[in-house]
Length: 197
Image 1 (cartoon, rainbow, N blue to C red):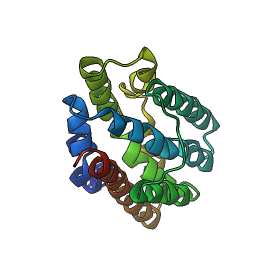
Image 2: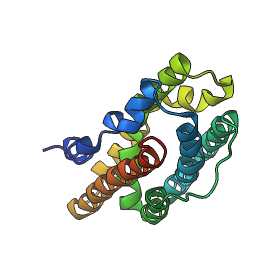
Image 3: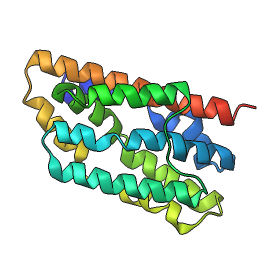
């Protein structure tokens, strides 16, 4: 099995497009407070992204991620909220685990891949949902517009992983699976808190 197939096999069971939170978003069924909580809480994770790229000595992409975090802050502001510390347990765990993964190169590669490989599809779905169903300021859209097309981060990460030893690749695979689960659990925590009344 190729490394790409092995990575995708680890990620597929927690395909974020299939998560009830994102499906409700795409259908316009999320209450405003759920979107606000997502912007506040998940933003704490988005703010960690530069760390992973810095660990990989990719200063250019790290700077892009800082710019993307600013776009996320605009998304939150358009919802009359602001990015804060993650308070829900699973979101706080995502943030802390990401900080750990992003400090070690092999783990950073796998964890970033699990997020980046899914981001174009999830961003496109969320952007379409915002435009079709929510009467919100245009400032909520740029983050998702920016990420709804493939910027090739996943391919860049995969190429780096292909140069690793078998043992290092196993570490990256484990981090990809762990990140997939942590992302899924974070969305579940937000969904169960704000949508399952």
